[in-house]
Length: 281
Ligand code: SAM
Image (cartoon, rainbow, N blue to C red; front, top):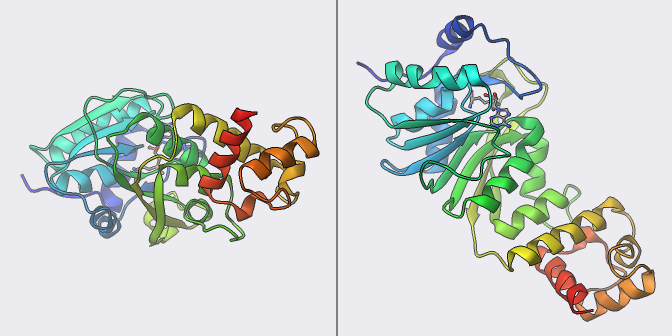
């Protein structure tokens, strides 16, 4: 058999066969363009023989591209009909390849049948950041990845301190490694066509700067700092650092952070030092 990817005709036929009406709730926009799929697989640097994790395989557009590149794919899909069809699609379009489908909510997965080294996914848009943080928290084997997300979210993930879109996702993502945008994707390659454009975002995992407990404490402080983004830290963090602006200033000074700075000026290591200083109190 000849290996193939999914084009508009195949997407239409599969949707009809499964009686699928794509739902917004599950962020179901399916890619029907083989060139886009091959580009993602290439940018991701997928190597033959490695294990790749895909979240939300849908009708299988990206899955087939990963299999074509020789990857062993573990695919986590919440929609039972889509998950059940996927091995059949792969069997016809990319025969003789290795695909394991896990029918589950990606936000709840804590074990996988294998040790994926790379994440390659066209993520469901409404939960893309929580999914990324959940996967990085639970699967140490993931060393790098390329994900397609809504453009606005992608720019947040890859933002530098001081930039307008720098915030909670940028900081939490930075705990796990370095992030970059890796190209735009036209909304026209999807069915149905979404209201927003997409970008590819890449990450390389680094060494986490602290322990699991320190991560939790640091993330709580980040959340508090950005709940009142325009305020100085001694104000926005007064609730979580001692109950008053004076107490918060004392902790911030011990951490080597100006009480008059704002969250958007700090990097992840600054927040970790604040969490450590708060813990010493
Ligand atoms: N990868 C396919 C493609 O590129 O054509 C589909 C991508 S579509 C943007 C997102 C997919 O994620 C859908 O198949 C949807 O059913 C699935 N999904 C949504 N929420 C999910 C969740 N919590 N866990 C796992 N999969 C989910």
